[in-house]
Length: 101
Image 1 (tube, one colour):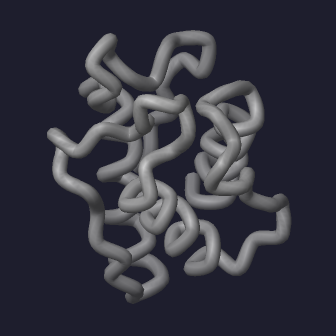
Image 2 (cartoon, rainbow, N blue to C red; image 1 turned 30 degrees about the vertical axis):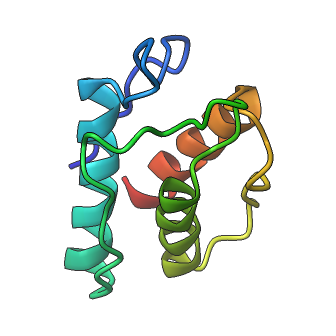
């Protein structure tokens, strides 16, 4: 079962590390894809900053999101790796939730 955190809340702490509730959500995505779709996409460790200093998504995290998206076969789109953490990413997370719930 996947639980979507409140998308109005920040995804990262002040140090750009993923907040625990969002880390749990991303872990649930990984587990669901591995269990239901039989694809192991891996996952960055909890200490890996989600956002770089310039505000863009870290490449390790982007790779995880891209693999997640591709594993589902969905067509709703993924923001670019240069897209800062914003409503576009929140929409992507909501769409992943809908796709996998």
